[in-house]
Image (tube, rainbow, N blue to C red):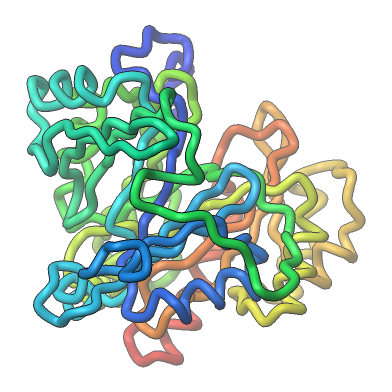
Length: 374
């Protein structure tokens, strides 16, 4: 099977309007220390806080922002709390992919009517800055989609949070917005979750990759990309495919203990600056051999960047009919080999770097081999 691209994905009527990604919430073992990591290395600014000091006794949450990217890092203060149990089973990982909507009540009702499993009924939070209506539905694994209606709110984040600022200088690295979030699901579940996004949230199938597109000598996987009507939300869904050795998807599922968010792609307008800065701050990236660059320009054609700069920073490049893109992938950002990041710059390209798949997955396999999990 060849890669299939659905040309009508963004031209169809949007039956479940979503304005964009509102926030991504991680459940972590130590939110204070995790917040320092994201501030010091990825250049996020600390903007809001909720915890015992604000009257919230069970958990602490740090809100970090850069460009339009908003992360929430949450830890439990007691071992019996659901957040602590989640971290004990899965390690640090994404619990909430929050979607910004105009009407959280009607969106929730429509999603449930279409078959979504409820996670939180519509409820309103209020303070002196206004009100926010929120509701939630389940998706793959233990991940949930929070539906957030905040048009009537002028506060820093949500009611119950207080504004905070950094105690040390922060150097932003040029992150602009969330380009896409990738989910790993169990063998045989990819089509089920693609159908969920199509039937429940009105997403369209954008691209299909099979095990011939995403394969190395040892491992393979399959992936389908779904997107909402305006194209602001893109969710690639991966499942393992049969191979000679354990794939990266299987390794993720083994360590995360269920389906979940594998990586988050963060967009930049200057990937050379972003990656150079991240490297200097200590962020570890996957390594692609120097031989990758010997014929890359023959494959992708003329680009604006100096190939020597891309080679120095180990940045990958690929082209589609709309332009080209530049991308690079970090190593996992916690001890379990689960969540990692992609840094991406699009120069017109709307695809996901198919031409880099083999080099990327061979790089991941080298890391698996070092860990003894290949």
